[in-house]
Length: 294
View 1 (cartoon, rainbow, N blue to C red):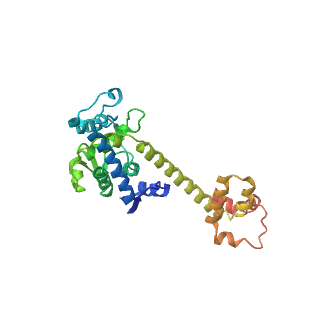
View 2 (cartoon, rainbow, N blue to C red):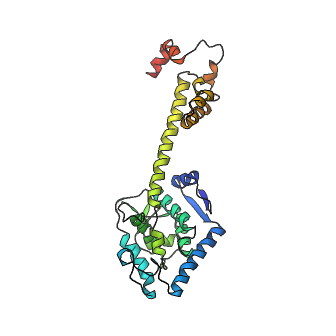
View 3 (cartoon, rainbow, N blue to C red):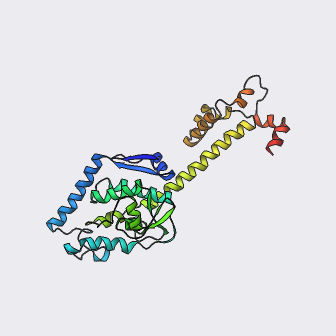
């Protein structure tokens, strides 16, 4: 299982690929927790002082100018989550959901969203226990981000909806109990903090990127094997040739092919005292090789 420590530095593509590939254990550094607690204290001060701040003690959208009474702030955040949990269609793959959650944890850990430590700890506990909310793959709302998918993610925290655990689908409260959790009551602004963001879109984009990288890597391996099978030369991959072109991608691919072919016994078998001066010509002179390929 991959261990991932979230700190002030951005997550790398290699770390995010590991999250997509399998289960992960997440931890957050002390400085990051300090930032989270500072952000939560800022929101608490706003409420205590009676200041009016959008999303903390006002309505949303067209109701932005509507003040919400202190005793209704928890209901406001809960209703925000429930009203946006309106996705449809097949569920997101478990791997994408796990990556989405880790991206959300990384975003919230910066301390700029005003979320409380206990709420973020619950989200971390779900990931570490392999509890993945059931998130429909279609449907979102507005330009503020992936509101519907993130609402379904957030529903689990308040004991609503379903989650997948080891391939099983469980009711939210049952799934929470697996991680030693009980449903949370969201504090001021927490529903907004959980819903705003593009973590679903980012997770899907990363899944596509990593799949493309895997296909490309397979293509490089197949190309290197083909050169070996055809008793080809590695001279065309000489770095001096590709440096003349100056195309970074071409230079990188040539270097990768050289690494893959390096040490080939087949290549070494005709490195010395070989009459070949051009591979295509040599292939025409070796019909048995061409026949094997065709």
